[in-house]
Amino acid sequence: MAAGVSSSHPLDAAGLRERVQAIVDQVLEQESSVLARAGADLVPLAGALRALMSGGKRLRPAFCYWGWRGALAGTEVTSELDDAAMRAAASLEFLQACALIHDDVMDGSDTRRGLPAAHHHFATLHRGSAWLGSPENFGIGAAILLGDLCLSWADQVLMSSGMPVADLMRGKAVYDEMRTELMAGQYLDLLEQARGGGSVERALQVVRYKSAKYTIERPLHLGAALAGAPPQVMEAYTAYGLPLGEAFQLRDDVLGVFGDPSQTGKPAGDDLREGKRTVLIAMATDAASPSQAAVLRAHLGDPALDADGVAALRAIIEETGALAATERLIDERLSQALQAAASPVIAPEASQILLGLAYAATRRTV
Figure 1 (tube, one colour):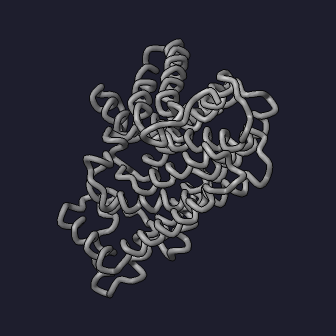
Figure 2: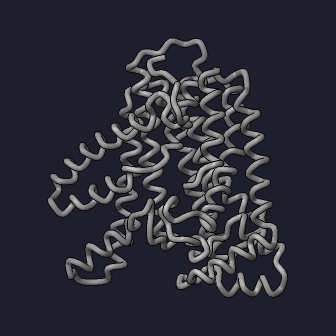
Figure 3: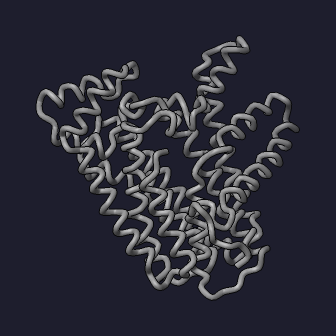
């Protein structure tokens, strides 16, 4: 292999985060020039995207790249092909940027990675420039367009990655299915919020399609397809990726309520203000007493929820056993993923990285 796997953090093995960032920067520089040709007024679009894409865990590129490496046991790979695979994996960062920008619009989120969400950024630009019309509507429109640009660029980066055409065609089929599943999951999430939440089973369905498949299973499948992997490798990646993806999102739900703002980049209890109908909330609602249920109904989704309100909801989530039950679900799914990562059909070096990534995805603080 062209790049070593030794690293203090599995996300940095093979220099992944550094290499992905270099690709992201190169693409943004190139596309900024294209936008600038349409006029100087387009420059703020690229600027907002640079800030958003200068951070992030790079989980999806990592699972794609190691999914590719894991399907190449005993195969010598040139540095050129390794770089092409890394570029293909980096395309998922642009798909993720699209998802984040649009998700923040749909959720009405104020911040992302410690910065104003894109729609707020553009609303502030409108307000500061004393333009006509609604700053909020302008911000939402600009953010939607910025997300669309990211979706377009994700395709460009994948298809111009330098991977052999036959490999790309196999990968594109997986990529297309992944995008459809992501949008389906986003709609299911919107629907669940509109219905006011429901069963744990429905909340888990949202988790599976909005996050689990898109974050881990499908990136692994994309890497495997690019490598021409046989069905048994795809099956091993599903056995690993689906439970781990669910555990990843369940951890995200816990952090959205109990996370430290200095670590998560979001205000304390922000998911409570947004009224997100997560598995954590579904479990708390199921187990709540009448008085606890009344507090949940009164305060969940209140954008003006203060620190005392956040503390009251957190207490109910703990008292009902919902937090402990969610932690058990995370542990159970992590155990399933760890067992699957040890499959003999996965190249040993990649198997070790997948083990590390499983812990990184579920034991995180951000």
